Amino acid sequence: MLPLLTNMPKDVLIAQLKDGLVLLVLGMGTVFVFLVILIYATKLMSRIVRGIDKNHPANNAPVAAAAPKAAVQQKAAPVQTGDDAAVAAAIVAAYDKSRN
Image 1 (cartoon, one colour):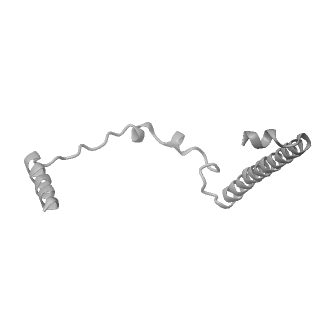
Image 2: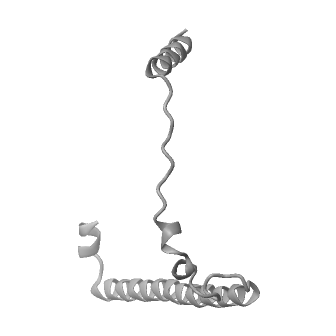
């Protein structure tokens, strides 16, 4: 690639570099404009949905602040475990069946 560039006349090389920069700016500008449009379209759709959905949390008072502390601090019920030997036997039986 380098010998091709060094054998090229200077004015042709400069013209190609200018064309490359123009293409770079046009491509990146197009992507930038598309992303800006996408951001504003998303914000607009979010406002429309919030306006339609009256039960949306953003339209109501905060639910977490209204919850009593006792409901938040409840402990999970203990999980009952079965016989460990029976569980181990079931695992061994399933493994043995999958091997055959």
